[in-house]
Length: 269
Image (tube, rainbow, N blue to C red):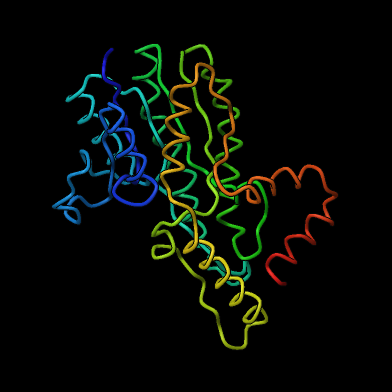
């Protein structure tokens, strides 16, 4: 069987690195991406390409380099992403735009770049790493939720547009996993005198505690492997604790105000 070629954006750390190492152990040829190769001189887990999902020229260069080496691309995993927290009123709009550029526009740039090759091959798999947070508007995480929710919906349409090309596209929404995402997240400052100071400060601590106590990202890697081996992949997959996944079910079962009250109680607001 021909070795499958996988490209994982944001593959140098966290979930991306975990997925890359697991797929490599299963016989896949893995390429990860990072915005700055110079920061990873000793990275030996798998091949790294320099790529910024916000920069179309950077994307085209990396894809061309990969195809020159391998001649094909079987799997794209859109994993690169950034976090953002803050009251909507007090979050600088330039930070909102930056987050959408990475979490939403970035995956679209990547998909547009690989579709011609996958269509030429007559097959391909694309997995968009979204978030359980993308299924609901979370207080002080509205922008992050919006970027991931937008990607979930866009994938639904993309599947229908590409169904005749042998290309399968799925979303995988993780819950809280123990990664370094908090270190790179943009936090709107908790400002003295702000009407949001106390509730936002408390919520921010709760969010960080959830990440610190999150599950091993190998669970995401195992789910990615299952999706890649599914004959007919579904649109939406979730991976996380029972309550995180059940929270999505409750959103569809409960009246809006009842669900809102559950979230308010969870965040102690």
